[in-house]
Length: 529
Image (cartoon, rainbow, N blue to C red):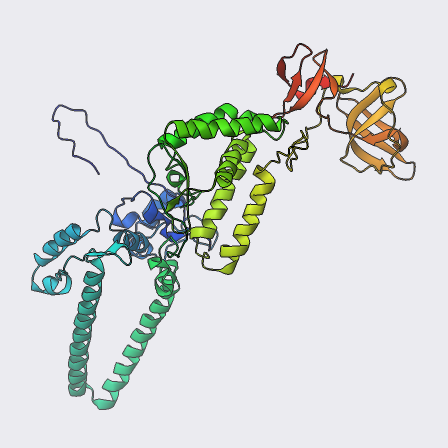
C-alpha cells in the first residue's frame, strides 16, 4: 500500500508492511475489539493466518484452503501436530465490524465504486451485484448512521437466492424431461431424489458447521451487532464539558489488547500536570515508608491547588460515559490512589490490572449480569481499598498498610546478630523445611540461614547459612524464626551505625544516618549491632 515508486533514477526497493494483532482466543475474548482500534488492511487471502502459518505458506495459500480460511470455515493444520487449529482474524468478522463502524473501505462512497465496477461486467452481474441503496441518515436513537451496506447485503442476498432458485428449477426440469425420454419414469425420479438427497445433506451439513463457527455464533446470537458500551441509564448527576486543563479519570474502556485506549487521556494538559505531580510526590505515599499523615494531607492539598490554579477540575465518567465532577472526598481518593500506584512498580501494575477488570464489568460480554453489575464491581472496590487506600487518622502517626513488603533473606556475613543483645525466643517454635531462621552459636551471635532438612527423632536440623556455610545436627532449641527489621530500629549498614526506615520496591533498604541524611543500600549489607 502507499504511493507507487515512480522515480526512474531512484534505487529499486521492496516495502513489506505486516499488521499483527492478538489472536481471538477464549470465550472471554471480545471479537468486536478490532473495530475499536486501528483498521487493519490485508489482502483478502491473508486473513485468518497466524505467525506459524507463514512457515507453511505454500499450504495455507493453496486452493481451496485460503478461501475457506479467509471465511473462517476451515483451515489445514499445517506443521502443527495438535488438532486445535489456531485462528487469526477472519475476513467476515473484520468486514462486519468495519461496516458497522463506518470505517475506511466500507463507507457509502466505497459502495458506489464497487457497484459501478460490478455493473461493467454485463447485465447478469448488474442484476446480481448492481443494487445501489440510498444513503442512510444519522439515527439519533441508536447514535449510528446507515452507510447502505446493510440494505445492499440484504437485497443482494435475496437476488442471489432468487437466481440460484431459478437456475436450480430450470436444471431440474431439463433433467427430468431428458430422463423420461431416455430411461423412463421410475429410473429418472429415483436418481433425481438420490442426487438431491446428497446435495441437501452436504448443504445442511455445511450450514450447521458454519453456524457453529465463531463468527457464525456471534451473528446468530447478536453479539456481532452488540455495542461494546452499555445502554444509557437515568442518572441524577449533571454532566459537564471538560476543558483541556481538567484531570480526566476515565472509566470508558481499558484493555490489555488495546494499549492506545488505556493512555488516550495521557496528553490532556490537566492529566500531564497531575502525572508530573505524582512523579514528584509519590514517594511520600509508598507503603514501604511511613510518611507523616500531615505531610500526605499537605501534598494532596497542594495538588488540588495546583490543578485549580491552571483552571482545571477533577472529572470522571458516570454510568453513561458522560463527564461529571465528583465530590471533594471522591476526587481526593482518586488522586491518593494515583499517588500510591505511582510510588511502586508493583502497585502500578496492580492499579492497571484493576482497571482492566473494572472495564470488563462495564463493557464486557457479561456486563448485563448481576455478577458483573453488582458483585464483581463491589469486590474490586474492596480490593482497591485494601491495596491503594491508606489511613490517615489524627489519633496515630502510623499508617496501616495491607501490603507492607517483607525483605528477602540476605546472603552476607554482616547479618550476624551478637548474642549479648539477643536472647533466644521463649515462644515454642516448630521448624519446617524451607523456613528462614536464625541459629545461635554460643557467644558469637545469631546467624541467618534456611532450613534444608529436619531429623525429628534426634530433634536436629540442617541449615544452609547466608554466609555460605552448611551445618547439620543443629539443635532445634537454638533455632528461632527470623524477624523483619522494624522502622526506627538501630542497624549497621556498611559498617556504620544508622536507623532503619523502610524498604523500597526494588528490595533495597532505606536508612537514615545520624547526620540526618537518607541513604539507599543493599539489604545484604545491613545487620543488627
